[in-house]
Amino acid sequence: MRSRSEEVARLLPTPARVATLSVLLLIVLGPLAYMAIASVSSDLAVARGALWPDGFHIDNYARIWRTTELARGLVNSVLIAGAVAVVSAFVALLSAYVLVRYAFRGRIAVLRALLALQSIPGTLLLLPVFVLFASAATALGVTIIGTRWAVLITYLTFALPFSTWVMVTYLRELPPELDEAARVDGASPWRVLTRVIAPLSWPGLVVSGVFAFLLGWNDVLFASVLTNPDTRTAAVELQIFGASQEGGALPVYGQLMAAALVCAVPVVALYLVFQRYLVAGLTTGGVR
Amino acid sequence: MNKRTATRQGRPLWMFLPGGLLTLVVIAVPLALALYISLLDLDQYSIREWVGAEFIAFDNYVEAVRDSHLVHAIGISIAYSALVTIGCLPLGLAAAIATQDRFKGRGLVRSVLLVPYVLPAFVVGSTWRIILQPDGIANRIFGTEGLWLNGPRSFWALVIVQLWAGWPLVYLLAAAGLQSVDATVHEAAALDGAGPWAKLRYVVLPQLRGPVSLGLLISFLHNVNSFTLPFVLFGVPSPYDVEVLPVLTYVESFQNFEFGLSVAMAVVSLILVAIPLAVYLRAVRLDTGRGPK
Image 1 (cartoon, chains in turn orange, cyan):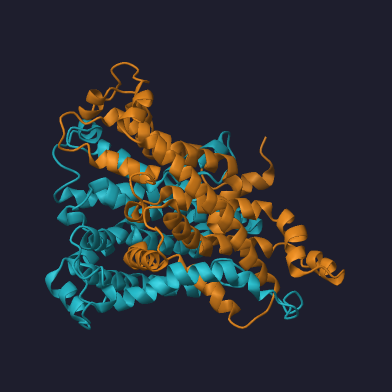
Image 2 (image 1 turned 135 degrees about the horizontal axis):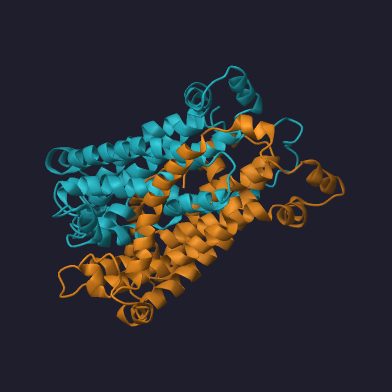
């Protein structure tokens, strides 16, 4: 039985809803289903555009590790994106705390910059960052480009505006009486932050951490220029794998789909686990 | 933020240091450097000693406009971004409206509808590259023939794939907007005897204007800046019909080694996003974090 208020709030008659959702689910699930089917099809069947797999080629998932350096790429991606997630959530918490709890000149300008910085095209910063890292490396006598540090620092910085924005919207919801009480007791801002605020804001920390992880996991632009074959991320590994299939004898499309699926699984798993928080983060923050 | 909660006493401004320092080194300085490099005659021969490269003022910009594909790329970028953004509107609204009423399995449907948006762009690109290849499944199912990843149809391939991956954002914001439609509005519509269509058209949709326009704006910004999807989907050098600005800039730097020219193009792309960005910044109320109402 539906309650009366639910009945009044109804937007669509059931047939219209079923029809709309069927079309939308077909659009969304069609390519996803094909991706799954193709990943267990023979390379030949995918290349010919066969609708049904010619047998169940689960061995695609075993063969990709020898065809590509995907394993090394995944390790690099986990290390880099994982570090970015942890550090950026923490750095964002620091900045957001000051932005929410303290008044200072330029506060609004910083808040506006947090949104504006997310729209700077990566292609504009790529070459200057490359030149800067190369010059700094020469000046300091160290290697930067080609190491995991280069992309780590880059992703960390690019993740900060959004992570900070997420933390700002989150900390605003915490009652200020909490840290006022601690401050009255003589606790330093650092103590208030680490003992009172941080333990209460873990959902916010998780959201900004997950978004930072995704930024590192999904990037191709910077990784394609700042890494070398040993430090390549999974994203670049898959892009190169895909691009190298043209012009050859038989493209290993079945394996390519299996590899793509392997790269997608961690992201979809993170999304499913943290869905509720992430959706809230997306609608308050805006830009991905 | 009110006066009571924000204090000026004992401000730990040092807490800005890590974030501020990173932003300075990896965003602010490179941004300034980009503006400077765009005025230099910088190519593969002068890059090692880039500080000493010849200063040529706005020659790169002149060359970009006159002798490169820049104008063409801007046209492609704007046209395809606008088409994708327009396409997001009916899909996003339909999904938000159809998942608003309670029904069995609604949670699952909502999760599934967001998956294309969650998938990494490099996975989406790799997958559609296979779907759209000449002997691929798309041509097989729709009875079409020929190329989707090259030639004039590649433009539509880009629109379709970007739309497939991007529309759930508009759905998400529209759905959030629907949640905040007041119950009394539904009561009033029911009292007036409005049918489902009239209610949608005259009562519900006008309330969604704010969040949906925000979604469209963000979607447009995202598409104009999108590098990974076109790069992975079509490869480089990219076909003429999908030579979008970010890919053109990348190719100019890392395939043609015309660094000064490439950065000048990228600066132009900054101007391109500045207009929608300004609208966006005005629309978001900074102190509450809520979108326009």
